[in-house]
Picture 1 (cartoon, rainbow, N blue to C red):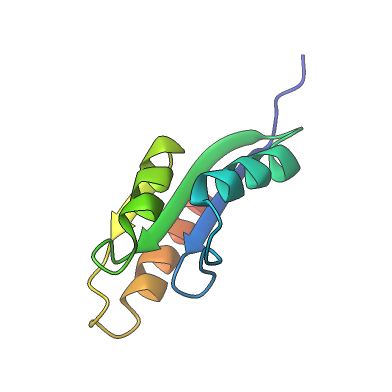
Picture 2: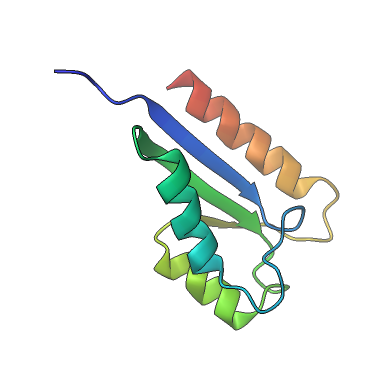
Length: 93
């Protein structure tokens, strides 16, 4: 019996935003179809300031059942620091 290798997605939505008129849920589904086919989804995290995202995008992120981490957008490099911390934790597991 083979064990599936773990894969994690760490999304900074400010640097890789959802295109206008597109669904974040569709993006999540596409990522899962493409990257998790022969792997185990160990982590799927989106770092964003939920106050700056549209209600539809926030709803899509929640409906996609990913981990949404709110950071204050005025704090410089806050999203990068949070993703770096999550990557470190993921690689140590």
